[in-house]
Length: 130
Image 1 (spheres, rainbow, N blue to C red):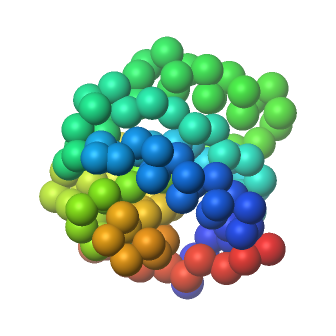
Image 2: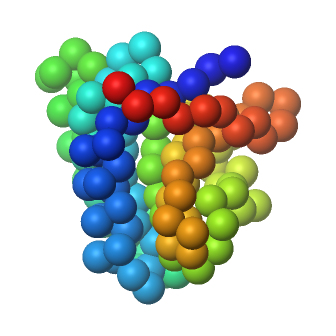
């Protein structure tokens, strides 16, 4: 089973990003190699919505260019659910098809992180700390 490795300091960055974006969802691109997140690229939710997120094309291009420059990969997509559990919504599931990386979701309700991959179905994977 696949897993994702996310440091305490990266969790802290993502938690602060999520809490600062309230009441809306926050989002970020996660970079690294071999299922280990080495860098967090915070992005703006251009929808400014509590139930959806969209990263602008400009920020996506900037993120992918940065990853290429640093010779790292996009290992995951992060977003928050300010008012619900950390489980993929139907919209998330749709976008997981076109972004087949690990999706990490932060719950604003119980302050936990969960990670998922989409295979034939949604599969929760463990988050380890480095």
